[in-house]
Image (cartoon, rainbow, N blue to C red; front, side, top):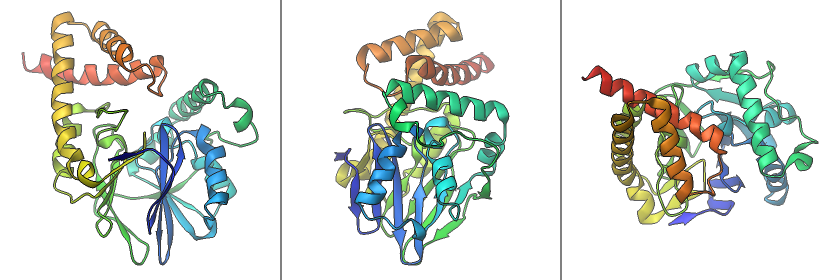
Length: 301
């Protein structure tokens, strides 16, 4: 079952955010951690939810960035500047990317595009949402744990959607936080997005299927519970296979990365015109996937 609403998931977990972009608050006996960073235009909603849900921000010890794409780090500057005690955690590769001026320019520009698209310019104008060089934190990597006393987040390195992707898993709650390294529960379908390296993306889906999952905490379009959560990664594996075959067919027919990309993006938006990413951004996402798969094809011929 897919749940889009924000609010309490269980005794330890909250779903926060708005619309297509969500983050999670995991509460333990010894503190709390915010998992993922959403898009910057959800900050007004996050601020309201902190107040209305009675969230004690003094107990929030960390925010965990699952990867460095613009739509997963947007609330981090607001949180760090307003609650400076919060420690930012991310993979080593994510910190490398977040230290690149070009990457920061892209993050800020794309978040501004979404703010305009969502009609949130005025609502967001009172907040300092831009990434600058005042953001720093610590590195987490494979095998690390964030111990909150009675709940513990385990870190897995799962590159493929991005080169810096990590996944978090809480075994007591059987809660999986794969960000876009797993399937995305959009409308009534599953989307797969192996942007950086589709092959590694598929390999890590195979790894994640070994985990016992009761709550599948996606960054986009809410979370999944019950039987659907238990089978979500297995279904994502099949969707990824089908998606790869579709990309392979488009490239082999056109032998042109740009033409294949444009065709695939047009086909997607003809079916799903309510997806949150503007087509010009989504085209860049697709081009990465087509380029990788084209490279694998050409190397094998």
